[in-house]
Length: 129
Image (cartoon, rainbow, N blue to C red; front, side, top):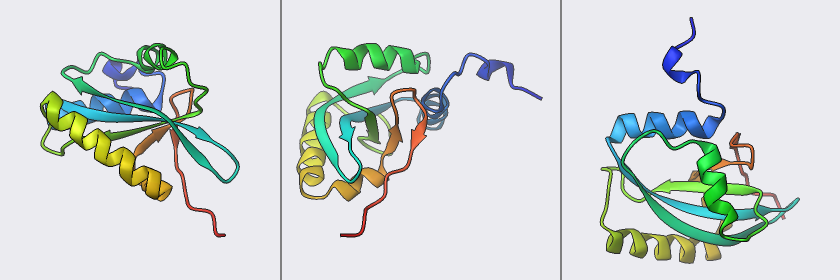
């Protein structure tokens, strides 16, 4: 039986956002746009968002990403705090720390909720040298 509340979900992202919001009651997400190559993952742009409802859909996110002007093919999402929402100052600090860590170790992308341009879940793994 299909859940009628989920009929408008077109992507894995939509399901992830609704489920995460249901679990947290609101959360701050850190977002990193990535250019994925055959054996590389380049960091392009980053930001944070406070999620205070579950109405946002993947199409809304893509419109926002277009404003970044980057040719991305992957979007990594991290919760700024498992407890839920954080202040802007904390979100900025955690985003800066995340970007610093990702610059040094791209394998940390495997800990993200990671999606392709169609909003489908991706899994990223390290390639042996």
